[in-house]
Image 1 (cartoon, rainbow, N blue to C red):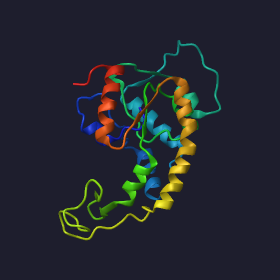
Image 2: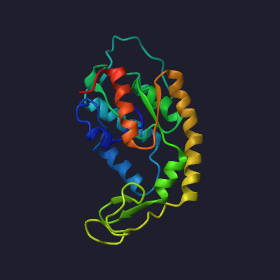
Image 3: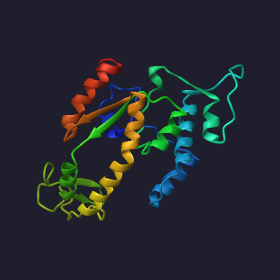
Image 4: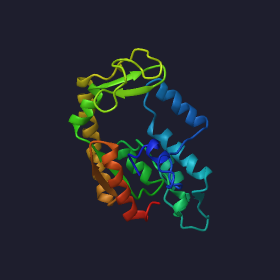
Length: 227
């Protein structure tokens, strides 16, 4: 599943078999260091983290040596995937939020695990830009306000400390227009990839309150009622 964030999962605890993968290992710490420095984490590293997490949980198991041999691959990750079987039990379910971002990453992921549901959350660009234009933060705590739908009690002040709110450095409309344009360019091949596999589902909405009921309904159709 792609595009469902950890906060959505935490507020819907009944989906106990579904969660965001968290990796606390050497490779995981290396990835965190790269992200903290503003550097993109290499695809191979992310895929190794996923492979490590799934094998540690017993969801990927070493294939019996009596299985039919696989052709040698020049890609070490693809070669590794050929030696594993994936557990198809409901308890072996997980969410990937924000990965893959490109069709190339998706193809590499396909070699490791089967993805059976991809959610395309679609919110109009005008709505996204409006939220960014009206977003204010309390930097020390990370609290976020929006003058449109979640304004502070006192304009320009944090509700708890009374300290002055600020804008994020990168909350520039023109910068975000460029980002969204590039995002759409890279996303189309990714969406086409999953559409061809028959696992893509799109949901439209301007807010989580509008999107969540639709998502629950679709989830119930595919995987059974959510209690």
